[in-house]
Length: 333
Image (cartoon, rainbow, N blue to C red; front, side):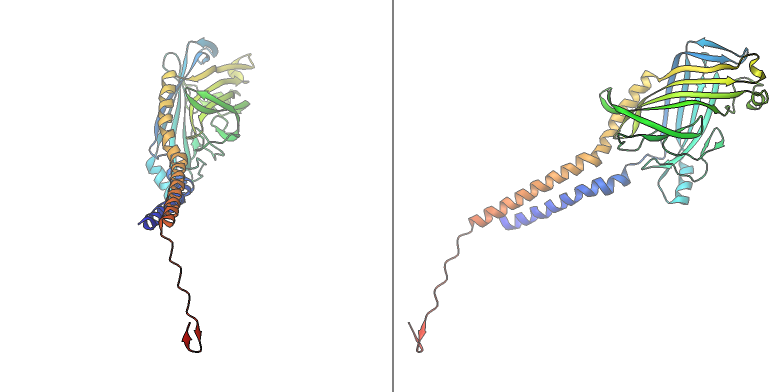
């Protein structure tokens, strides 16, 4: 019975030991992915801020500017891309809506972001755009990959329509989570005007005809939970200017917007709580179950060997064989 039990334990030991790497290196890359129907909203505020009054074309200090970022997964579009590429794909339709202290629109910029559901790498299957302008993204946007590494990444900037390095600056503690802190600085760059302007009669075309251009610079900061790759906090020191042309009169430049943009406290709390729960699901596949099954397999192997050793020790020793009789001249001796 002991020998039979040890063989059963040995079989289970081999099973769990083999299951551990399968979970980590086979199941995890296929199961950990962004759902195609994701929907999120975040509100960021700059308080106080400098904002251009398009009626007088003069900047003024306002108590608050709000930026509402809405992210919606487009499931029908994702299915079309999946059929064309054979990959698990997510399509995010996003909108950045900037509102002044009176709640009126300052600007709004829609985007479409198409990316691999597992790796977060961009998928160039058509339809990518920023404010209606076709783009070809390089690097990440909005979210880091699962199991984020301590290194620089390329991050897409929607204003310039280009990607640039975002630098890993160290590990920090944020609201009880270990996070990686990243920074990206975009120097002053000439950028397109938003297609939707806040004042009737003022359009990108009228601004361009006046010889005026829009310039932008920002310092972008993210606190990223590395297991899920989700930012739990984000800030920007954001500046925009109009430069040159007859629209500004005798001025060379005028501030359109300037402020330190921070995520609103209630959205930080909501994001941290959500990431903490999602983090456990990723750890289940990458750490808890693989290590648990490996330890269980080793324990079962040790128990099987112990039972086998005890079984052998408990067996009575075999009786020595009787010596063969010697035959001399056909007679036994």
